[in-house]
Length: 238
Image 1: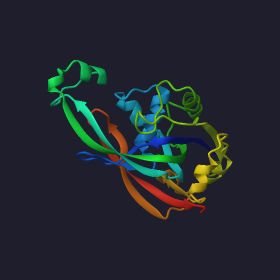
Image 2 (image 1 turned 135 degrees about the vertical axis):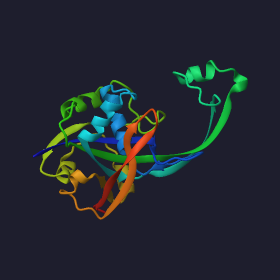
Image 3 (image 1 turned 60 degrees about the vertical axis):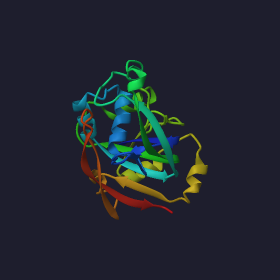
């Protein structure tokens, strides 16, 4: 029997970073590995500069994401004031208050969000981890740092309701998951079609129909470096 950690992500707005160049900041259709690892790290109190801990957290747990609703795409025209060059400050407040106003510059960007998207996240320990599933469940209920879905402006709109289910397969664990918050209207909009994106460790349990490559394994937060991984795809229902 395997132990599966399941929790649900929903917000009016969420954003799952894709490869970004220049002024365009796109969003993937479902959570990246780095986004989920970041969410778990925030719950556990792991800071962004603790790269070794983030690396182990990413390697220790396999990830699957069941998309119950992709939601709708929203593009936002965004402006922000920034200091010139490569000057760095500890906080956004310092960035704006310590720099003379006449030296601040304005950058323009287009940022994508998903509206009313709903996901069930499934994780399974694949290497002996410093953070067991029970501790993660506890911290997801009482996180050390604030949780958000891709951007700080996108907090969860419902409780994550993390739970551990022992089962032979991931699909059986998904069927047995019990979430109390009723958001059936969102699920109905998707016509019962659910799409599953998962890592190689789940391939013995689910038959993939396609394979993608994503650059979302966190390597270095300081240098914004990410490694690639294979993501497998299957359709459930619909």
